[in-house]
Image (cartoon, rainbow, N blue to C red; front, side, top):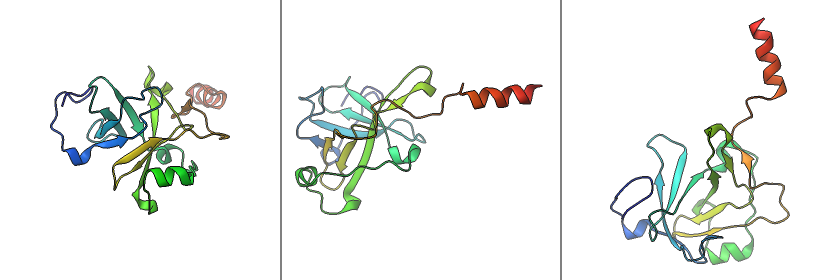
Length: 154
């Protein structure tokens, strides 16, 4: 299989993840695979098995926002055939920016995967305090940072 970030790879059918309804904006893209972006990186690629150029960079939101909460509606639990909490993996899609420090995560629309059954859905959280453009990294030029830099150089 040809991929966006990994070139040509061999893929086992059991590693494919199905988005029965596709992904918002990509309703025909239903089959994906998770690949590490780099060996030691915290980032994962959600690569379409049908379209080599379609790939999303994902991150575990709990790594950078420990208080992040996702309450799965019963309809989603049923659709993904989730029976145990440890069957669930939650990721958020990144909008990668240049410089990378400006990269944001879509906390308002997590990707929910039943890792046992390889079924997934991008869940749109309504009435949520989360934003689709949550900055992963603290802004470098915050007023407190400038003040501390000014003090350290005098």
